[in-house]
Length: 209
Image 1 (cartoon, helix red, strand yellow):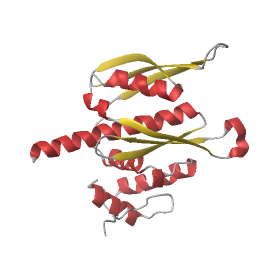
Image 2 (cartoon, rainbow, N blue to C red):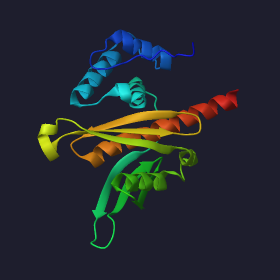
Image 3 (cartoon, rainbow, N blue to C red):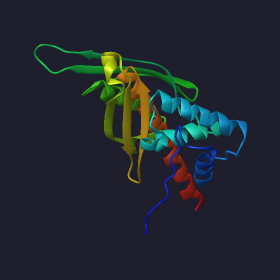
């Protein structure tokens, strides 16, 4: 009693699981169509690269919704830069600069943080909170890094998992790259877009109700 069914979609999953996910999330993917096949191939490719969607269901849902079409574009990255400076008489200093487009405008912002990922998060929020005030309700809850293929040393890929949430729910997103900042950006961007979409959907339901 009180349990919910959880369907895993990964490199070993078949089309039936993807179809169940489509029905459960109302994605509109049809069994056997080209979009479903391409999506499953894409999931297998990403899992081979080190993605682990069992631990990042929000990133999986975003991947499926984008494949199905109609998912809104909240912002498009044009570039970011992160600077970390260490001085002998103090802690390390991190600053991030982000340039992105939201709607028909370009935003170019900079922010500091306790670390490079925190600075990147702050710069992204600084750019977007005026466009999407609901972003103020979305918080980063947890941040985890796992090194893949440890034998590669500093050239090894890393998997970043970010858990975010608002006053209603939490969700997890993922990024994978040889560069920890790039992997963090992937997970962070997915986290923000998923959170904004969920809040927009919830507000639409409340208005219609």
